[in-house]
Length: 107
Image 1: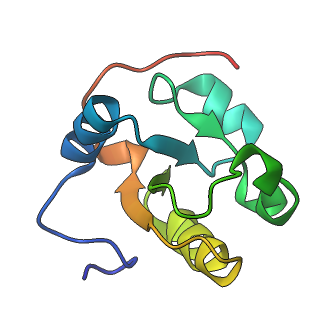
Image 2: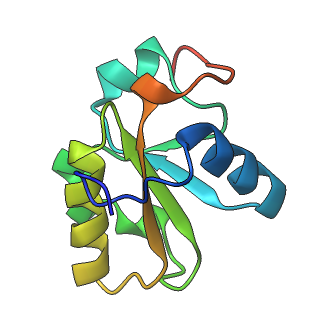
């Protein structure tokens, strides 16, 4: 495990490609203004500050979830929170600052 609780072997680009291929939900836990400046296409924005109130958007607690933020710190906390809330298949994929794929802007 790496510094922020995500695996070192696979980078964010590989996780995003896997999510697209397998239909895995990507959750960006950055604040809304950060998300609007640039995010992974198709990612869902649920800021860490509202995670506990926003679980209606994540109804299936067994479905795989990939969470990320800017550098991996907030997504590490989000992954732990989600697991405490009963989500069983959460992966912290790190930070968008290491992502080299396409970016969408806006909300």
